Length: 432
Image (cartoon, rainbow, N blue to C red; front, side, top):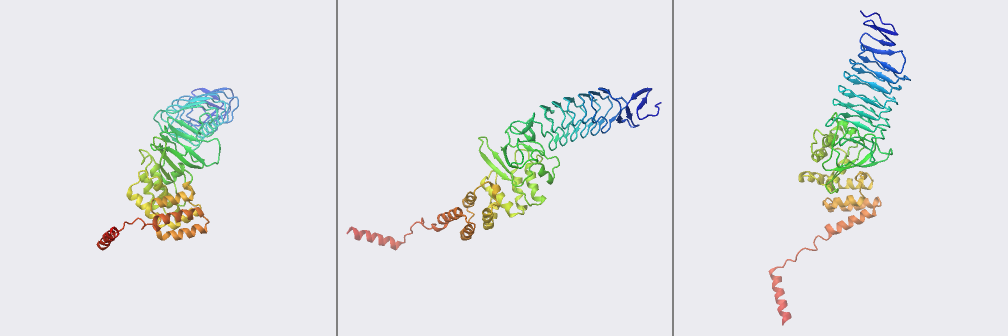
């Protein structure tokens, strides 16, 4: 029969466990002992929060079979160098080994499915192998592990990767700022902060983890037409921000020769959730099984409300009409015709800079698609003069002259019977 536990000692089956304070549920709630090597009593089922936090001189810990849970910050900031985890373990919770600078390696048991946030943050890990059942890596789980050079993930497994899991893991980050494992981008961290980024995704990459670009002001992504799938765990509208955080980010898609074959711009500023869903469904792997879904991108256009966003979407799709059905193209052209003056004023006011084009280049797109009608040319010239856009005025005048003013020059001469006879008589008279 178990005797009454004191704060310092536990007696179970006539064996005393000096220094271990274990409650009736088998939770180790305090350790008051000392020594470099510790073996946890086999009556323990849970290592409680912060039990060994900050222990100096602690080197080796053996946790027996039967323990299922290691709670928050259980070993954080300690001097632990080696730990043996039992096969019965299911959970390693928040910050459990954070700040353990002397912990170089650890074997995670197969039953562990979650690595919680900050679990190994700022630890001394050099290598980590994750089990087959792993389904989730929490925020900053390995952040600050500057000596971490190898992470082994099970082949074919795609655990959810939360934000900043590998932040500061310089040993894992390649020259382009990526952490790539099994052709999957798990983290992105350039060597500079707060600078607009132009990023090229390597062609061999098959998927991009959730929130990979959430920390940085990405303005342009280039990838192959067989683009990777984008991982969004929730599939809800708010998850758009876990993919691209800034309005106006452009996605360019290259063909087999490396030439840009398609381009879209995520113009979502000021839009409601319904408009954002089109962009999400274009990227979300549930809908997108073979590259970017241009139909889904086009689908969002009718429910986009902001004129600026509609203009951006229309212009970029007309410039790069990859997989653009004729009926959809007519919708874009119709919008631009109905809003020509407003669109040009937005050009003058630098509201369409997300297109990355000069004013006249945008104007030429409108010209090529025959969107500029004769009736509006005069108003456009007036506004262009008001904004001192002389190059714009010259282009409009040139277009007006070529398209409208000279339209009768090449009309063929129509001859009547009388005139034909007169000509004959004239020739005869001349001959005489």
